[in-house]
Image (cartoon, rainbow, N blue to C red; front, side, top):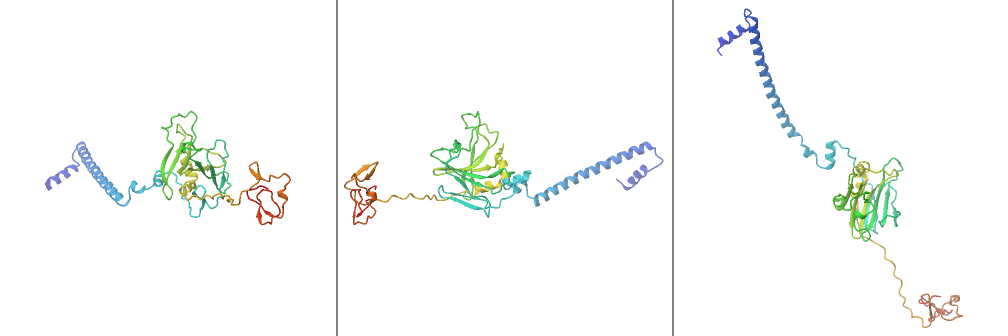
Length: 322
């Protein structure tokens, strides 16, 4: 626009001699155009600011996938409570050479208690080892954990152990009911079966424990509820939150060589068999009616008794019963 015309336009806008209405309309139109111009610049500027922020954010802050590396990180990201790590450096190690396993427990806990015979009529386990906290706090939900040992000659599989209980009215076919899943656990990445059954399982009662089989034995490691006898709808979730020591104990489980004391063999008798004696209740005794071999106290002879009728000058015969 020529400079002279621009001056003429401004002179016209500010001319007080012109009528008020045309001047007002012109001013409204001009203000409207200015408003559109300001809004347009604001939108463009805001988009540029957002792009710059995203570029900076992506460059200097890792994405969600980078932040989440473990299940614990996932829980932290979603706001779920994560138990504090358990320090196991001072834990004691219990070794059982009879069944060939070892497991750790806090050093302040009581010694394990062994029951060689099951205490319940319905029990099918062979032996139970109980590891208990030394604390006498009645408010604690968990008292410790148990290791139950089952013989595969008596219990054919995990589903037949005492820790797995069917619900009343459960279907005979349980193939559609999840019971366990295999998981690698522990320092040697053992193949445990993790049983984690919630209340909504149509076949089994809620349960949570780890099981492993080796040779002729099934080992179930079970968290032990205290005197409260509390039961959970979601046992794994509650146990992880309230009793983090349990999982650390399972993580410490190892197999060791089985060492069982051998029964002493009875000494072989090399002495000569008596030539004259009678058999009474499977034992060789003196056949003479009036002979009392028990009354022979001296027994310093040089030859062995061959009749089971011991005389003072005879050596007792190991085949005979006096």
